Image (tube, rainbow, N blue to C red):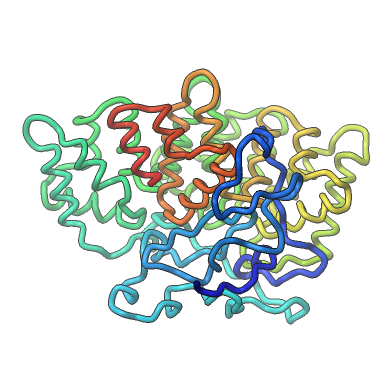
Length: 450
């Protein structure tokens, strides 16, 4: 049996120095989950004691530095692991396929080693470097690859009488985010046709929606969702939250530019015209793209000041200073927010999510809770979001499609979210989706999650 170094809580995210005074973030108590005793622990998973999630001080899983060709790491809970290079998000770098040693260029440092960019606590300050755009965002997010075979297979699946839905699912359900633009260009070049138009004409209903959502690629899909959330009567608040909240400054700027180019309208103006009162102020802060970069160090003094400021703006006064809380939660990095959440719970014996839930309401509450959940435990946040799209009378299919499509671009995150869902609800996510959908629509969504 291989030996794994003991796990002492969560390793700090890449670019964040290890902070003294803040223990590993335990996350929040399950939100709306059944009592822990209602289902037995999973094999190989230590059931956490009440109020502690996940278990502290030990992990039954392999260290994060170990990698397989297509790594599928179990759910860890809490803060995310250091992000991999964009080019490796849907598979190994080409060097690995050519026999390059694992742990070389294109791979994160081995478990227990310090990333080169990380400075020990108390060391000289570094200028934060910008967080890069997400995979599939702009020309730098496209991977050079030969897409002639999948393009031809898609054409064969739709040519002539009838459609081979199985082939469409096989090609598109796991196609990498960085390859969507090259695939569409190749299809157009080889067959003088638009693959999106062909798919749209050959399919229907939510199966069509899911396939065309994949073919838009991450950036075009986000921009399309924003327009869909804003146009018409009312605002689809959940879609607006899903696209805009907790985004890097690079992503936010690209989204605004692409929205302007696509619809010849300002995203800021459209969002402002669709929201009201203080919720408009909240999203103005989000759209300003002035968040701390992920590489910014998490400083104890700054964390303590933010904790005190949030307390003064909420529990320590009559009425809530909502703008102050919004300014902190929208402008701090996820690493800073994790430290704030941990420190707030230690000092005041209440979770940050609980305070937000008590002091806010409506769309603003929904948005701020989502920001906190994303920072503290992103896999659990996605698991809860998927369940919310399926819970109650009738499935919210548009929301389910958009969330599954967005999640499936990151195969490692799919594994984490499935583990979080199992831990929270005591059931398998794929089976849950299978029970809420049917036909080719069901087969496509479950394929993306497997």
